Length: 327
Image (cartoon, rainbow, N blue to C red; front, top):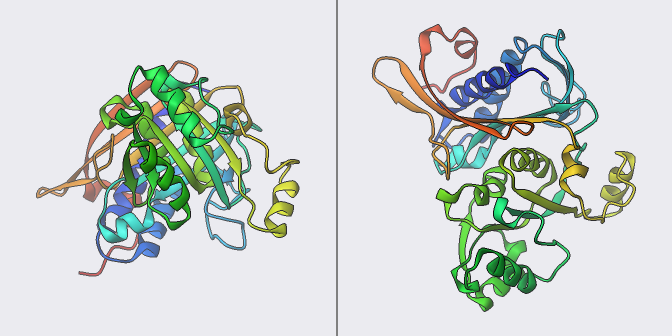
């Protein structure tokens, strides 16, 4: 894959973020997601790839665009797998909360796991803990190992977890051992990435979230030098069968980084829609300009770029073609 692809992907996530940001705080998550998806799909046409969406907005009969199996890009470049979440955190935007992002991961054809839309158990960490933990260990043992590797007391650890009723038993263990807990309302990808950013102050990300978001987070963590281990959580026989049909012979086995994103090169790009742990949100100025904050990374080089952009909105033809909130 070409180095120029990194900037092209940022342009795609920027437009999706700009399209969804006007819906912030308006209580309409579907319109916010639709605006981001339409903008992302339109901008993809200018990217020099022959991409196939392996993680997207759903099956062809469920999603009008960016559906699983859809071809994207100019169709002139390398063949690649594409994973997208045009608006990671639809509820976040609807409620005006933090950590909503527009996200893309791109890898060589056949690299990205075709993750079924179900829950996935996750254990994510930054570079200091990569290779030193196991998702198969009891939570108390994981915390003990993490504290030892970081030369901290267990009580000095900070663990992030989605604020969900299904995590009650995990939270009880975390309270029992005395770690600090930072609850996340939504934003599974941002949560799993947080331990790789020292400024976020997060040591571990635990609990369950969406499987497609797990693959996106694994792509980011590969670029950041961190790690994500995972296990799918089929809820019933139908979900188990779906895993097998998608090529996952043992849905309950531990999934490594290589299982989820392969061993080759990976690109990851994200633009903040609302402010988060490591990205600012879209900010508007009186002169019809808007500021975006993005991150773009490449696993091969481990280069991490933070991109601050100022956009003159009247010149955004593709953006202006999207429906806007009625004021």
